[in-house]
Image (cartoon, rainbow, N blue to C red; front, side, top):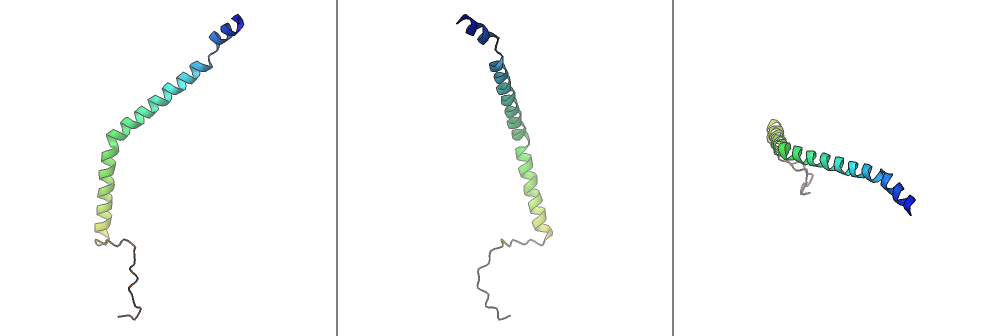
Length: 75
């Protein structure tokens, strides 16, 4: 039993696990902070790009859905 306690005390596997958990938590916290800082700006920029694209193609609002009411008579 004494040998087991000495081995357990010298075993560093648990310490390495704790290091990885702390490192992972730090990376997640930094990612969350970065998202909160730039998330709104990215959303605004993408909205502006979408508006500009819509304007540049003549204001088309075609959603790609067809009602199927075309009779095919050409007129």
